[in-house]
Image (cartoon, rainbow, N blue to C red):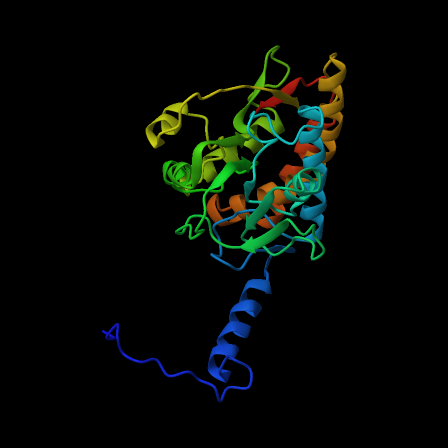
Length: 312
């Protein structure tokens, strides 16, 4: 134990302000974060390796940007649904991915400070002055010194082992009257007319993903599917809204048809990304089995006679 009154001697001889051992450690840490892990032809994050079961390569990042566009269609261009978003001064984007939402929000709200956090350093380097990105593991302690007015958690189903703990952290890091908004797709898929059967390739595929995610304790299910968890954390005035995303353009409604058209592209781009890690690491499939399954699922996704959807 160091005496709190003990004089601390400054290291004025260090030309760099950081000694070589410290600098070497920092450089090693930076390198380890930037070095992706390769597996089955895709790359994955290295920080807290294995927690996030989806890739972080260019192909997946392009898909994430496309998915951001689908969210914008769903919400008619609005960045969020909660009434506090417009006047929020300090905003946190949980699992920011490529940072598109954070960048859009920062551009539209120059008075707000926007922080996006992710396990992978895949965000752009040039950002608005009121936006920054941090590489961190949100399942560990949150160390921000100031609370947020608005915390967004979008597209994070299957990413957290202890969802109640995450929700509690969000509550504890909000200002009084602040908002926590969750937007997620959940499994299983829906079908109201029997055109997607349990013996179809897409149903078998999504069932295998769901079971694998449950097995490792990171179930592909909305972070807020059970509103009692929000209540237990302390949240009040909870609003639950549901939307349907068709997996292709089969819907008659123009907006649902457009969402379905884009969602078909989204799924087509992401099938292998969603499948490879979970099904090879957890379910024991070979890479070849996964790719063969994806090829069959792709046929179903493009079949407009199959009227399936996922619920947000």
